[in-house]
Length: 426
Image 1 (tube, one colour):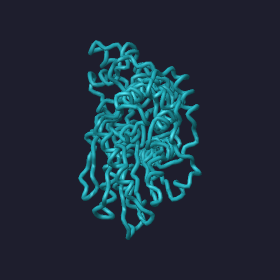
Image 2 (cartoon, rainbow, N blue to C red):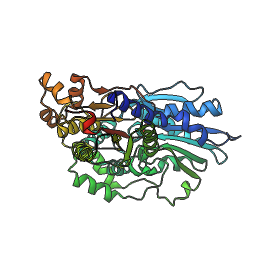
Image 3 (tube, rainbow, N blue to C red):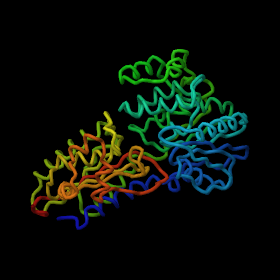
Image 4 (cartoon, one colour):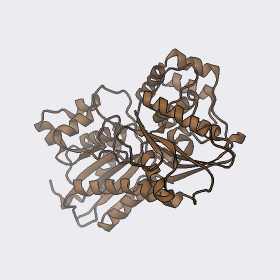
C-alpha cells in the first residue's frame, strides 16, 4: 500500500494537529459560569488573543488586557488586545505589561482574575527586575536564545530577572481569585514552564539561575548579573498569595498527536507515537528518526500497511551558523541528508504556532527527491546545515510549510511516513 500524495497527507495531519488546539474548541468547556462580580481578563502568548476571543464568545464583553505577538491579534468585544514582539521583548510589550499590572492592582477579594496563558508569554510579558533596562533585557533574551539551553533552563533565568514571572502575576492579583487557563507548549506540560509560570509558584533559586548562566557560558549585561546577586522576587508555591489560584492546562501537545494518530488509522496507516517530549538537538533528532524510519522500512513486507512515526516536543539549535532557519526545518534537513534519497520515506515537521525559530515559516517537508532538487539548485545540504540556513534551503526547492498565524501553540509536530519498499520501488 502507498499514499498517493504524501506531502498533502502529512500536511493534513499537521493542520489537524493545529486545529485540535484551537482555543475556540478548548476554551468553552474550560470556563465556569461567568461570576456575578467584577472579572478581569489578562494574559499573554501567541494564542492569548484567540483565547480572549473564545472567552467573550461564551461570556460576552469582558474587561481586560491581553498581549500577543505581532500579527496574532483577534477581534474582541471588550478585552483590549496589544501586539508586541516575540521572541525578543520590545517597548510595546513593556508598556502593555505595565498597564496589565496596574489593572491587576484594582482586583479585590470578591473579584475573579482570568489569566489566559500560552507559549510566547515569556517575552511578551516584559517587566524586568529593578535596574535592568529594556535594552539589557533584550540582550538577556538574545543570549538565552543563542545558548541552546532547553526551555526549562531558559525559564529559570527569566523568572529570577523578572517582576512578573514565577508566580508574581498571581501574587499581584491577591486577594482576588485567579483562574489560569493554559495552552501548553512545553515538554511534560509543566505549568511553571508555560510562559515562565506567571501564576505558578517557583522552587528554583538565584543560585540555580547563576549556575545555568555559567554552565552555558552566557554573557549577560552587568545590570542583569547585579539584579541576580541582589536577590529574586519569585513567589514560593506555599505563599499565601497563591492560595486562591487555580492553574489548568486546557490544551497539550499529546492531544494534537492523538488526533494525527486517529487520522492515520482511518487512512489504513499504522501510527507509532514517539511521544511529545523530544527536546534534543534538532539535527541529531532528524538523523536518529531517519535511521529509525529506514530500519522500520527494512522490516516491512510487500502488502504491509505503511507506518507513521509521529512526535512532538521542542528541539533546539545550538551553535547557530548565522543563516535563516529553525529547529523544525533543521530537523527535516538532517532527516533528508540521513535518508539520502531513500524511496518510500517522507517527512514533515512544523511548529504549531506557525513560526519556526524567528521566521514566519512553520517548517518543512522532505521526500526521496529532496537531495536531487537541491542539487539542481546548486545547494549543498551539508553546508546549509552547518550554516543553520534550512529555511532558505527549503524555500529554494519549494518545500517550506507556511501557515501564517495559527492562533495557538502546542509545540512542534513531526511526522515521518514509511511505505514498504515494494510499494515504491527505486
